[in-house]
Length: 569
Image (cartoon, helix red, strand yellow):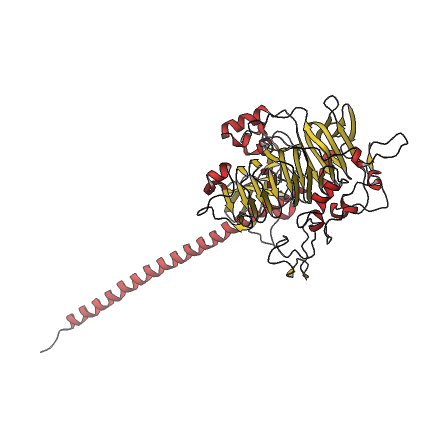
């Protein structure tokens, strides 16, 4: 049979139609793919621009934070500085980066709101890359008070509470092990960077009976914290920031005895030739001060005061402020507040609401701090009894501690890394650890150069008493071990050596040191002054700014992304 031409043309048309349809589908798919690819590429570029804008804004925040440290804005109501207003010149963050014309610049603003703690700032920054804007905000605190002041007892070493007659009302912390013996009473938290121990043996709060009583003994799972992070001690090697504060208002910063102002801001130094610095950090004698207060003629501490040399103090103290002592603080007898709070019910054993009420009630009462570059030496340091217990006592006396030559990387003597060399930032290897940050390899404390109150040391103390021939009195005539009451905030990054012979020794405040040799007679009671930590409270009117030592230059409190703000871009 013969096929017709018409049918062949129909088949050819059908094939052509199929090709057209397939081609159309391919075109549509290709177009869709191209559109999707283009869209994905645009999204990828957008994500890159978004990230670049974020990093530019973050960089602006960092530059602004550094500007705060370099030239802090004055305290006041809603003080602010900004690139837009021309009051915050940070050209390096508002100009194009590496020639990238897609970067349109950035703006940043520093605000210090009213009714906030001193040194608190809000930094807001925006930047735009192409059409992407990223805005971030950080809250920071410049020169924040060190966390070591959150504890009634802080030891940058091995903590030890030995004795059933020790009681502590507040939190305590050690930057290594914390050892307990004899069942002391602990009404507060216990923190140790390593182990919490009982007579040298690690204690397990989950399986063992507590070696202490009080709130911590009754509930060790809540109150006992082994393995806590170490807290950095403030470095008092330089007093420049504190001196600048003290000299900014000499009428309100200083020390008075009665109505006589003996230090206006910072005490001026006098030079000398001998060396009584040692572990105190001074190799040249500095001008010091002898202070005695009575109920009718008290020592007045107000604001920030700086004394470059030793300070000898005893008696009645009043006011609110901090003395920065460049060498040693010698406490010659009891130091008590003229108008101190009532500690008969320790505030740290109260409910939070009761504690807040106690803080509010005592806002205007005396609160004085002593920030000591050298050591805190309490009692008559020339008394053989003091020397025996505080200096010569085997193992824990000052003659046995202070050596920095073989501490190892952890900075704590008596730990496994002693005598093990480690890499220092300068690229050297050694076992030396600069525990006090003075750049010198200190040895154990030396009685003659670091402690003894001899005639040479006395000669630099303004106001030191003399006999009828004009000769300085022997130190045992102005100091005594027969003492036991200390009220105040006592800080040193060296030794706290104390001989307290009165039957009951009482601390109302804080004691912080690296090496501790507190020798008491029968009973020792430590009561934390909750006003020191009044910054825990959200009400700024219940914050007492003593100008305490800071632990680090800047603290970031919060960091957040905000809705994009293209204002000023």
